Length: 327
Image (cartoon, rainbow, N blue to C red; front, side, top):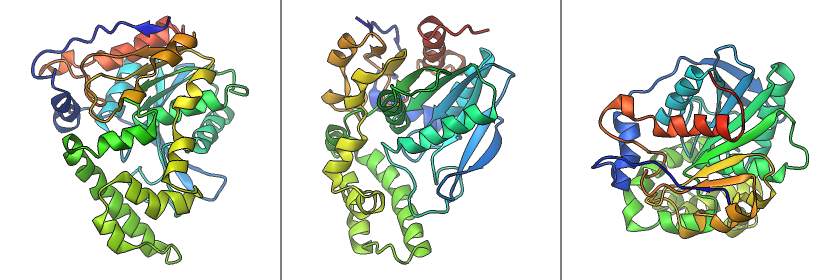
């Protein structure tokens, strides 16, 4: 029965999900001294990988969330903490998220695991790691879980497991949750960058006939999916995208120790994003549902040195359940 009782217990006001969600990006100062490597993809594009190395035989591949990057505070803080425990890290910047627009019209979406597969194959070919652990956050967590589940029959032996945090594993219901008034501010922040990126793509690729009137009026992810995700990536409809990109159907197929941490007060997540039944039926899929934590928050107090619960939890799962020794 791999459902953990969580020991996450923040102080006030961090028991408020919105406060916990916003505190990390607004007030934490985490940075990491990365070394960037740009790799060329099979389709004549590029992906930027940001490494932080300490000379380990174990590599953690960190994948950020929607419109994030290696500079996201949760990426930097987890890179630093894992480094302190003797683990190398590489932050996988999804296409168009590394500070420079990618070369193609297509960027990324919640289920685009072919890019994850390509990056893993590149790392195995060019580096000599004995152990690889995937660590994904939000959208990156969905990619992590989907990749591990859909490739269970042919995963490289070096991949020992994964950890995913604050993941909308059921995209259809999570999008309905995101459209509620409580998430209006978050939606405005997401849409500001996403709309600008689509406008830039439409200028670079005149054959991509973007309906700018509809773009300016868009208030739901579904609107952007009609305008971009569906036509560019070849889905039949937003509903087809939701079904094919969600990681939830793949959880039963995960065959290496993998942890999902989704807080009860995560305002981005629907009830369908807490897969208790799947965890009870799969000895390799672990679930932890803290009462508090918000969305990729898990801040404990106003003291920076005390705000490493998530980093410690990830490291502890790597050591205790994936069984990789840490320093």
